[in-house]
Amino acid sequence: MTATTAKEQSIASSIQLRAVTKAFGSVQVLKNIDLDVASGKVVVLIGASGSGKSTVLRIMSGLETADSGEVVVGDVPMHDPKRAPEIRGHVGMVFQQFNLFPHLNALGNVTLALRKSLKMSKAEAREVGLRCLERVGMQDRCANYPSQLSGGQQQRVAIARALAVNPRIMFFDEATSALDPELVGEVTSVMRSLAADGMTMVVVTHEMGFAHRTADRVVFMDDGVIAEQGSPEQVLKDPQHPRTQQFLARVLEA
Amino acid sequence: MLYQWRSVLEYLPDFLRAMGLTLWITLLAFALALVCGLGAALARNSKNAVLRLGAGAYVEIVRNTPVLLQIFVVFFALPSFGLRMDAVTAGTVAIGVNVGGYLCEVFRAGISSVARAQREAAQVLGLSSRQAFISVIAPQALRNVYPATVNNLIQVLLGTSLLTAIAVPELTGVATVINARTLLFVQVFAIALVLYLVLSNALSFASGLLGRVLFKPPLEQVRPGLWPVRRARTITTTAEVAA
Image 1 (cartoon, one colour):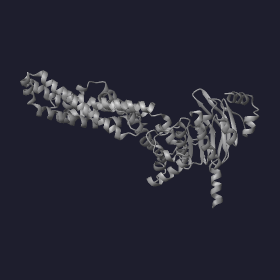
Image 2 (tube, chains in turn orange, purple):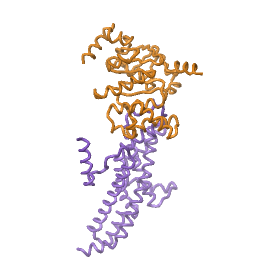
Image 3 (spheres, chains in turn brown, purple):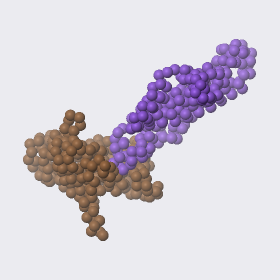
Image 4 (cartoon, chains in turn green, blue):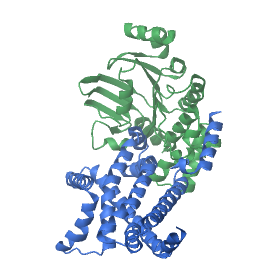
């Protein structure tokens, strides 16, 4: 029984992208992307703005559909428009601008999907919600509205909200880019603890420190293609591709 | 001079009754306008082309023809098609349908004012688009358009004076009748004006209170200028927050 569950889990939280393309109007954002994320691994996508990192994430989370190619997330073939909606509620997404619901307090944000989508009772949702807020160290602020929280606190609530539905995979789309530098640490430490717990994560970030310490694999994207990928040690310390070298030189210099 | 006022004030009960009718028509017409406006806004955003077209036609016709003419159509022309209403009902319907057209556009603006990112966040969480609309989009949209909606309520109140044209005994109509009887137009219309001011400010005040209860975190005062004390308090709290 346990073995089957574990097996299901291992199938259900991996991601495969095969020959994925995507264009917005005349701009070809993704050109033939192949990417595998094994269950329980943390993959960090780096690259300049406009290189297609966020689009990859949005395709994997079902917010965009690929023009061609195969995308399998968990056991859902996302390239099949009939089945793609099945992924909703099974992955978590954390956005650069937090996207908390401003009319709900922290607990309300975390419990909304539990109540509406998972049909939990109020008491049950509250219990799960408080546990998720505790996980990100925000249980004391559960009654605060997003406008009453700092950026880092809002992002932690957003992570709790994503965790509440018990997702198999978490996507982070520049989760720390909108934060004041001194607030970045509180969010990355939550992300690291998730990784340590074995969550499958795909992270778009400019935090090279996070990539280096936490990633199992770093993927460098450039102009819609994956230019280079490998262990953080390889990609960040000994990049082979000239574009990767250029990019890292610029990022580390800043 | 004083006796003139005294002789007009003898009509105060008539004024107050008319004021009551004005308020009653305002509230009913506004309720109808809310229903029409919300229905039309949803229809105009719907996937169904017939609904979209129908709602579009409604809004365009209602907003591009005179209200007074619309009142005449409902009261004088509709009976030819077998739809007979008394003046109060006809006037209420005409004004409600008219303001509904304006509210439709207000609500639509409100819905599109909520960032697409909110919808996306709800979608990834597993909410259906209906659930996302009800629990995420609509509450924020309503909050964004609340001041504009209250403005339309005041427009309804002021618009009811047009019903004088179909002999509804509302405030303006009754004032003209009393004026004809006494010929004390300064006094008569001064009283009518004051009563309209009382009504509109009472409605704004009530809407402001409702807004405070309805929206969390609390909405700003809808018309802060009218309440100097409260305004001063708002300014000090803002200053405190800033400090």
